[in-house]
Image (cartoon, rainbow, N blue to C red; front, top):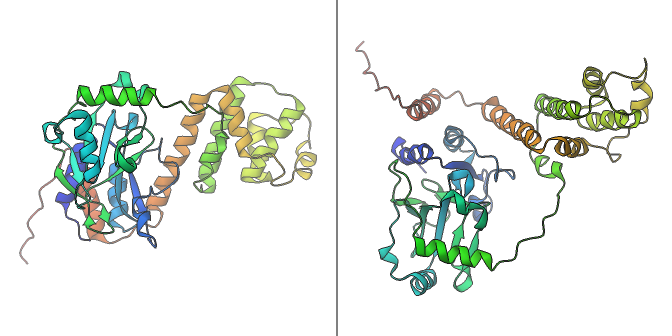
Length: 349
């Protein structure tokens, strides 16, 4: 699929009103259904920069991009209308579909398929959920925790997604009051899931980190722990050493621990790491858990910063030196900054 600069112009308009993005469809694609799947598994709370998504598309690393719905996109609701049954259900509850306006509408190109974007006021964000309603769940209210693939992404059947009403940089139309009231009532009837404290490290282990990024993350975590525990017992000192050693190896663990928690006596590290067994029950997940108990907000900042650093490293580690691609990418960056230089005419030889 050949894309022009104009294909990406609407995306900058979305970025300017606070919409967040992720790449979708990690290449190579063997199953067409995977073209809608997020590029990695930590996308819900970790948007990509728009220019990075564009570069990944140009380098054929992914098939397109999606927008993160809900709180990460300034309260964006994407109403997914999937076929005739969805239209009929909508009109049964809200009246004629054509009487409801949105200034953000796109389609996969399949018959009777489209999504509309509306803005939801912040005071309702905590009360709303992603829900599927209508016959076979054909009408979906997509909010926090969901994403929607948008133009100009590839589509396995129609070739690509298209704008019906492209974003022009204006604020999104507010969600109609009747639709909001109905949706709120629907969410109230859905029982909340039991809140369970999950393994804090599990999500963040699903993205592979380079060694230097791992070191950066561990140093951030142990700094948080040190601030709340200036002095620790010998047993805790051993556990922290093992947790770091499992992630970085004994030599690096000794260096970091010596900086934050010096040994109780010379040679202490030798018996500690001699008894250390990789995969023996203490890992960086345990350290994440301890840091989160101390300061959950700062811990999330450290973890998210590591993901961002790894993405940046991966994106530019083996960058294609094709000058046309680099020049094109730089134009996108300049466009986002609001300064797009006009192409200079070539000088006659």
